[in-house]
Length: 152
Image (cartoon, rainbow, N blue to C red; front, side):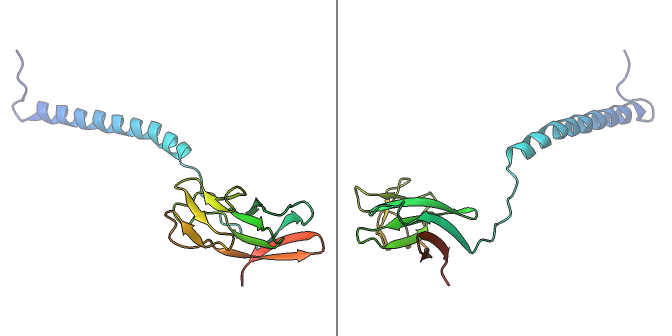
């Protein structure tokens, strides 16, 4: 039977070094496999697109008491036409948990499906958990064209 420790402690030192080397290699191998997987699962950051105004459509294409979602750079904006024919535009992102809101003709308001948040057609929060009103955008009508821009 051989002894675990040599006369000068060499055997244990070699064995410890080999354990350290093999353990480090195993950790490095796991990192080499896991890092690309984690990098793939995390979406890349998109730079914020600076937009000052967008065309939302034609006046004749939008009936009274309706609403549409329009892309304003990276963000959604909701354009609403009320019963009187006036246009209003608001951020389509709920102020509670950033869900996208929608116009509900049957309720006569802007509604968030996530937690039943409700906003009137002036963007004010009237029911549910939203803590503040929707951010308002400016609507510009030039002839038949509808444009939306940031409020000054």
